Length: 258
Ligand SMILES: [Cu+2]
Image (cartoon, rainbow, N blue to C red; front, side, top):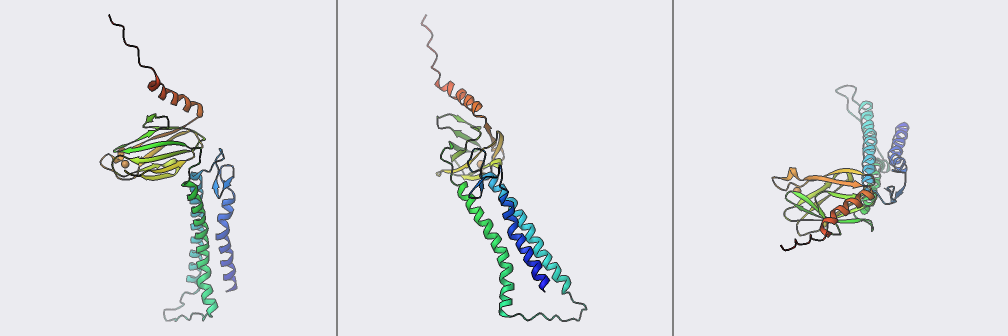
């Protein structure tokens, strides 16, 4: 029995310490704030945080699965009946032993759950608080497409933004309930008529990403997808200038009367 206790003890330590060891590795340079990885621009990167939490959860599930599966298999083999007529005689446990056997495995499970829940809360609080210097864009959903409006009034159906600067979308719908999902940035939020919801993300890298609607919103729902593009600052400035120029250009002079 002493060997079983020792085996359980070492496996419990593995369960509890594995995520801590994994977490200490950090991500993207290893810097974190409140457990959330920091991107190269020094701001939190929730999408890396979600990936990190998911990997920790998978490790925990495997370790706990092996721990409890192994213990069940061990007891199944050790205490199996030697003949069909054999009657089992369970050990008589004292109150302390009985309570210990109930609480210790529960504690192993719950401490791990609470550890991950605390990390999840910490990450959620970052996920719901856009940084102060974010580029703020208004998003309007309509059956069946997305329309973006920049602070200077420029409107587009493809979102472009400079890389290395966080983006916050203030979202509403003109008709039914939609749901904005930017897979690469790990953000998803309902977009509803009469309400303004938001998501933010830290682009970090340049490149195109895919967005789609994840709330069935009518017959054209499956066509409600589009691109969002993270660009170098210079390219973004040039693109924005090209969008502003036509609106700002003076009207052509009227033709002289003949
Ligand atoms: Cu939709």
